[in-house]
Image (cartoon, rainbow, N blue to C red; front, side):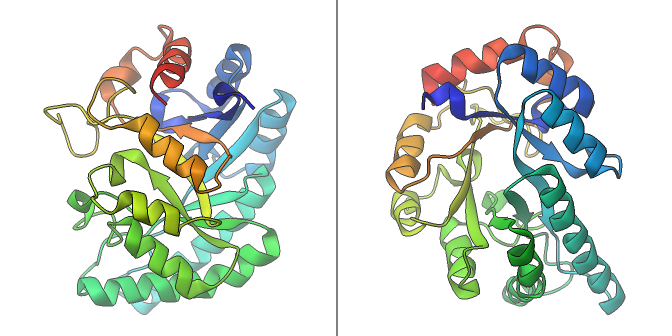
Length: 269
């Protein structure tokens, strides 16, 4: 399989596009996979699935589940219920992976919050196993620890996956979040057999913003090909998602974004 046959377009790379527009653009550009975000489903995963299949695309992942830590027991129960719904949506879409972003501590200590993440995953793991959906635990860069993710290294994600002891509990490796880690190559090898996804973008210098500062592949300092080759060597041969949060890219998405992604993907990934 050629590298471009593994390309998946993550919807957040062109957030202004509707799901229908994204599917149509990917289909006409020969992009084989799409990574779907739940808010784009508008509550109807079956309708979205039919549209995606009609255009000949496959869904690499659904984003996102997680965010287990909550200020009240009732809210925690609601979040677990929402994760169960997300598993159902992933199964309906034919997405083999539900991306798990752990969420912030929400008033807990970091250690307690990480224990809460593990507990939440244990609660929904039987649902994932039954549905044939992998819970892909994605560590985020440490700069997100306060507001988005208490799981901030691939080691922590591997630790959680190991504790869950299930083929339905794996890790998602996003180059933007892990490239800096001196142990990343060791942890990629450790994840052999439980890598559920690989995401790419780039880290520009200076970084223009924490959330919206990702760059097109080749416009930053991440050694993307080295990371991709390490992930491949660890046994992962699935879709590779281009996931870029960048408002400037969003503004010009209609001006040849997909051909640019295909070219940069081939050159740098």
